[in-house]
Image (cartoon, rainbow over all chains, first blue to last red; front, side):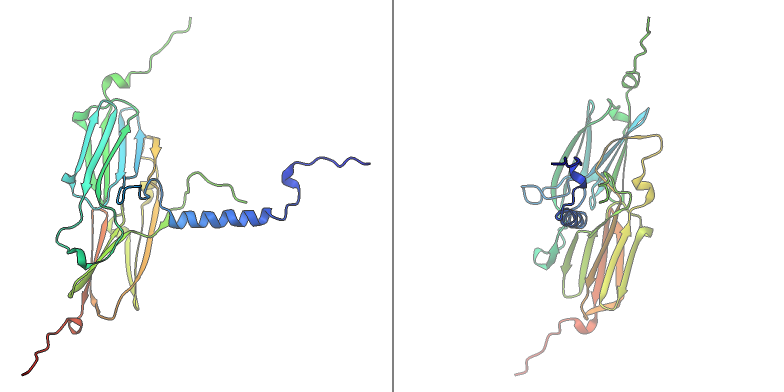
Length: 156
Length: 122
């Protein structure tokens, strides 16, 4: 009996492979159009939500951006505890609109609290915060001592 | 089959979340469209179809100058959604405002559509 040369599995003709590929593509289509990015999905508690954040690092500063649409400046609370940053607030539904007048409510309301570890200790007294177009932008200057963490080691 | 990219360079197309409330005089639509500027938003009325759209700017999706990424959840988005509006809406009185990431579209109802009280004679 002649030996059948061995080929890796991928090159075998598999009638279901193309179907699987189509299925995967379909799943991807649904994922990309119906599911929002990041942790935007509703949690176990109805109405629970948490803003999506970006954290950037530079030599002197840490920058944090958070998507918090539809709030007022003074409803957002930002605090720094060592190298932990906490953003919290409560998103309230407009009071002047009567409950019965709503035809559709999709937006999330309620309180949120998000704590994140920063890449370095920052000077809480020098934090620059702006809120524009629903995006909270924080520039947090690093503390002098955390800047000089990099120690130079002499090789003997 | 194409490789799954970790981060999509193209903005993700999403439908903005909306709240709609209606009174005898008007219909107010509030759409969450975070991180845009007034200029990025398009509002179009074609027949009975009102379309709102907007795209986050290029500068928002790239990394700020001099910074490196530590963590990322926000991504470039393209918002688009179409609504069908009723005949009672006065097409010439559509008012839109963008503030704190919320697009607020006020659609006034025409005078003919206002509820009228009919006197009952004895």
